[in-house]
Length: 181
Image (spheres, one colour):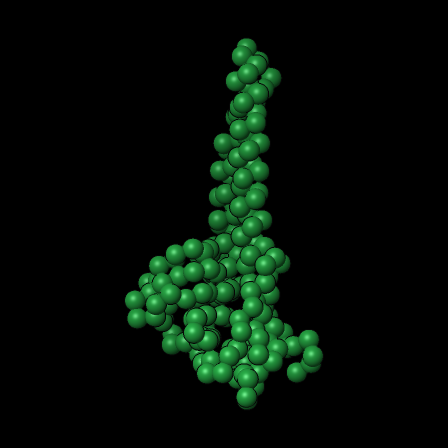
């Protein structure tokens, strides 16, 4: 392991790529469908105040859709860096630091464990699955995933579920990085 840590990619599976494409297309199409008619009224200005308001509304809808798509992309996980005592969720903005304390448990999650979870504050399919979730029998957990299978569980007092491309190697590396290992 280098001083900078070992990096594990997290690539989107086919299901997530399809969901992202569909959601992005729907968001962009809905924004354009709502904005274009409002912007078209700008030319026949019988009531200039309402035309200006309509034009502003059209641009506001486009800006809101662009901000939504950008923020979902920017907060989505790209990979994970494992360093001594720390796992970092790599994302374009606001990387997440997961402290590896003595007693931290790192293991593969049982297949299907997270099905039926409730999203408490997160994203469930636009560029990733991430944020806060809850499931009976699991409790509250944080998810940083780019696929819907092969989850790795990290429990340091808080529960995390991650999806590195190579979960077995990732688990080995995290276990080697635990304090006292």
